[in-house]
Image 1 (spheres, rainbow, N blue to C red):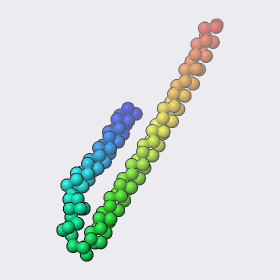
Image 2: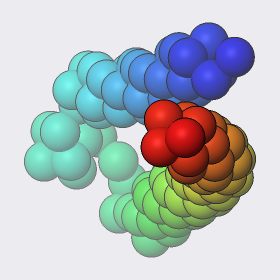
Image 3: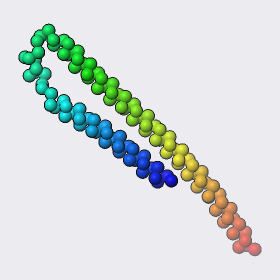
Image 4: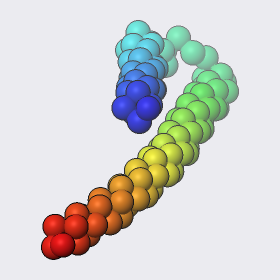
Length: 116
């Protein structure tokens, strides 16, 4: 049971990582295809520059907010996974403790039997 859940958890992490990498690569590619600000300055009327700057700032703010949300979601997911792993480890340790107690009792019984 635990090996299968660990595998699916790792696949989920890898999928989320790949999704984030893909989104970043896509954003970088779209930014690389944009004309430079210097080349656009001649083509944009002076009175539109504040509006364009505000639009760019809004876009930057949206990207920053989206990245912040993605980071928070990733952090929460890591905490959830840690908690699940902690619970699973606790259960495993309890089982080992129970088995150890049974084996210790068996060893005691066999020693007593051997002394007779």
